[in-house]
Length: 453
Image (cartoon, rainbow, N blue to C red; front, top):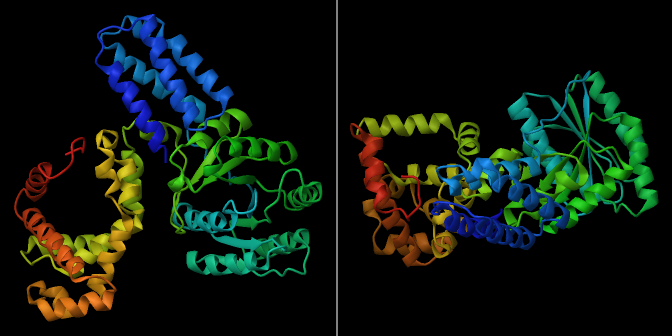
């Protein structure tokens, strides 16, 4: 997310950073570039105008003109104003009510409501330790009920059954009654996709809202629709008292206009970002961290939180002990590392949060391909347990068998073995005294410029 905006702003920042003093002309030229960058990112025009006016006003004030490093001071102002536009701080779900707290999901068709409902259930279970019940009131698309049932099983949340022949209000009331009797903390109600101009459908969701009195009414919207996402959210808010927004498909959105427009246009906070298709791919929206990402400074806090939540500690500790005892790093370990990385959103997801990524050339970024990780795992899965433990035995005929079994070419198997050998050498350094320092020193020469090593 924000790749295009980050690239443009990084170029602007580079020009400003080295200047000993800023003049009115400098600021004017810089703000013209910032304005173009925001418009290209499909940020709504009123947001662009207010943002650039505020930055210009502060940039021409004392805090920049008298600063010893005016370029840095201007960057700080841009960062501060980005945070202001997006809402200052993370606004958590307000579940402070007598259980069960009802969360109503609303939005257009195809925006990702059903998947978001399941992702939210997983997040509430894992992060907030809540007992969650899911129910589908989408009686117009029978597949939606089955989809939510399947996803409920995947996230290990209880599912309340419903049928297409029932009325949405009746479904929601029965689910709420069940949630009360079975001591659920949260009831998430998934609804049918609807257009704000469809009066009958809007009347239906208003009746649904009145029947269950949700503490949170979340509008789920596709970020790839840009500033239209903000306009649609406003239209829904005029008919329904929204409390927040879930912005989906942000992993496929290189512009980021929706994230920068929604708060200003609707007055409602973005509460979550959908960052992939998996049910683990949901993260709370932190304006300060997102502003840091936009300016190419990374998001280390989110990265640390993700590692805390998603890395299998037992496996990590076993590997650390194994290396300390001098036992070799084998292909089983390599596969575990690939799967752990994939669980954290893949290489692309990690790169987005690392500082300095804006300085890495596009050709290097474009080589990062998460499909390649899947291919590597498939190759290792096609090996026998003995081959994974003792890779040296993998010669000609074995390579052919592994390639056929994984649907790849022999050169792919060779490439994996070469990558594994390099990783094995690095892991030997970790196992030695002062290992991590040695590893970083070894990696420094191999990493592209701008990486934080």
